[in-house]
Length: 157
Length: 166
Image (cartoon, rainbow over all chains, first blue to last red):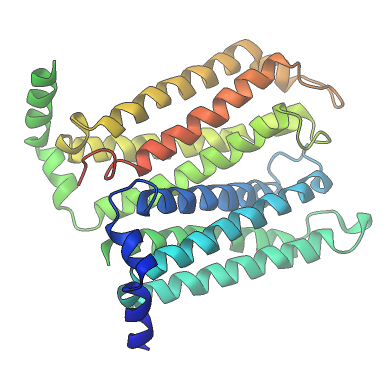
């Protein structure tokens, strides 16, 4: 396992990312990662707040359009995350907090999928906030907050 | 000018508050977490409203989108308080930092733009009826908002890279 992580980290790409003084290397990837999370967590927060009953004037149906934006944010972060991982594989790949972060993100995405199915998957009649959707929305906010916590912790690892 | 700033930073860094911020074990990381959460709320909700002004999600009534904005202000408040905390804790890292200067410039721009919109059009938006579309003048404000907040986040991210912090 360590050999694989070391191979990734010491690869041409990993080395370039880590050692290049160009702002298009590590800084650019980090910026993309911050952007992606801004879009994903930001849009998800809007959806969650609405499901929790705030801004009730916003039709739930209209927020279905947020999903493509959230998936784009997710993929930008998944890809930039892989790139960041490669540059520091031996450290990140052996850090418990990083595993926790990935786990939290997986659950967060599953919650988002559950919200899509519960609120938007059953036809127009089901487009109301229910206790279940409220719980999912709360879970979503908590999970993304925890993802930010574990993500920030990575800077100290 | 630079001498005055440096003298100020030196003095600030010597205050008990500044030392406490640096010395208390979890304070800095907690502030960072809150800063990120605050900016997510700010950028997410403001971005949502700006996109609405630009014509996306047209079935969302303007007044409804506007009614979510208190959350953006909460996010801003969280980020502002934690941001000031960072500055007070380590003023030397920010005072001669080019990235921080740019961040402040865009912060002023974003803030002025937001306040202008709020004071000039806020009431009209809050009272707008369903089906009303935003005048195209709002699109300029919305675009400026998206761009300026983006660069506030960008220059913040660049603090240790283009800037010379930490």
